[in-house]
Length: 124
Image (tube, rainbow, N blue to C red; front, side, top):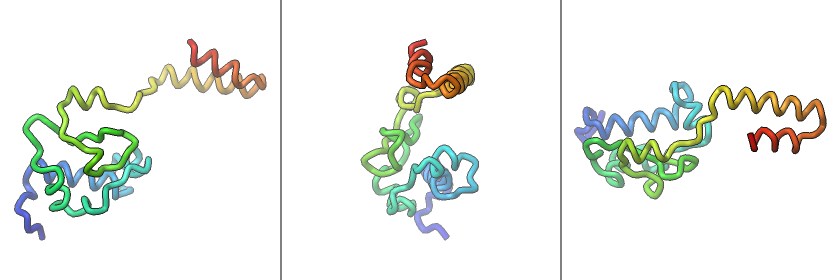
């Protein structure tokens, strides 16, 4: 039973989702968070502690990790605009680039010229 009276707020929903994706291996986004070692600061496993540190989510903002490889903790989180969040993403490897990389690695393995083949890929 919640005693903070905020279970229907946007801030509570944001906290609940971050807790699920970092603490629950059954969550659909687990592989991108908890499965990569992105964890939740232990005190934040309680909503009241999260709220004491972060406060109410301002309108138009969402929770952002400053260091995308870091955990969800007070020194690594902020309320950010969509523009700030889009500038703070992990690099995306496009399928075509990934296919080229796999081909280059296969060629490198076959030819025993790992460094040269991989350098050609990286310079392309």
